[in-house]
Image 1: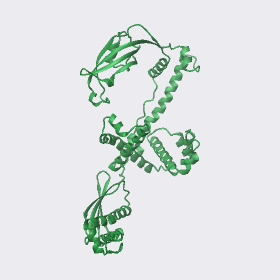
Image 2: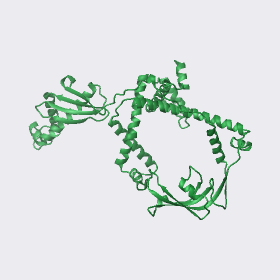
Image 3: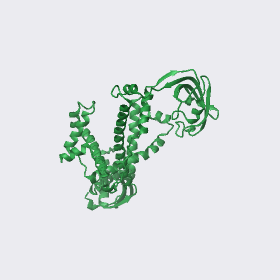
Image 4: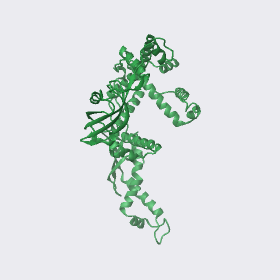
Length: 447
């Protein structure tokens, strides 16, 4: 039926939804009832008549007005909704939710269809992004800490018969009680741990120093606020730390022998080793700085954008997340319901907790997609093929499957999406004052 024969009122609703109120002429309503009756008539088996030959009046009486109306609705409404969406250029994200206001034979009909649509995304001015680069300076303290880590790797640990001192490694049994009741899940036996800050909590560190084998260090602590057992979160507790063994930890001297050992002979002196460590840290800091800058640029664009994330997209993302979790659990021989029981969550609680993160991911995707449109990012076929070749060459599992990937439409679309996202991020980084990547240099040269 031509769109001109319908009266359609479109109303924008919050949450990137549209309400379509449609008025349908009486002639089309009557035609829908006739088509519905014809369907019943063609299938009707009524005594005294050949199959499909019973009079319409008898068939209508046998079917009943309610069933006939429902069939007419099923015949007409989905067809009209599909036509309206097509003619109005509306790309619905979910199945239309239809509310029938009026639908009877001999009268014009009216119904309302509500659909979710892709939202309008308003980006900040991409030519004036202000992002502060991360501090990537390598300090002397950082070099010292790295050298200390290298010393820790080569430390000699030997049993001793003396009281515990800071820096030792102790073997201990640990028991935890709350309100005088021992908590079995917190019990540990023959646990090895270092006696130093950052490993033991301050209360236990102070209590265990000076203790000998067989003696007990006790401390009052507060259990973690994110404890797996909700009933124990942030609860005061008593810890009994029974010393079963003491080991002394001896670190190697920072000398030429140490430099040769940790560098496998590449560095002859501590000065050489120190410079090599500094160079490694500088290179790592530069990589970290680039990644941190890229993340800060994306955050700046997303935070500055205006967009309402459709509920339908969040629902779809959460469902996909749950299905993916269930699949991974099945591969491990686990069931989703038992996994959630272990987490002490109902399915509804898990979904509710997953929604904010899902909404955040979708917002990033929507914003970057719009940025790609504004920046005119659209990889050519040659660029996609080259990217696929690079990825296949760098992945042993894909190395001999390049031709299969190229011939697979789904695979090509996957790599095209990844390359598009990569090019968007690179362009945004450059606009924010970041470095031009080797990929971008190559693309500029090709142009």
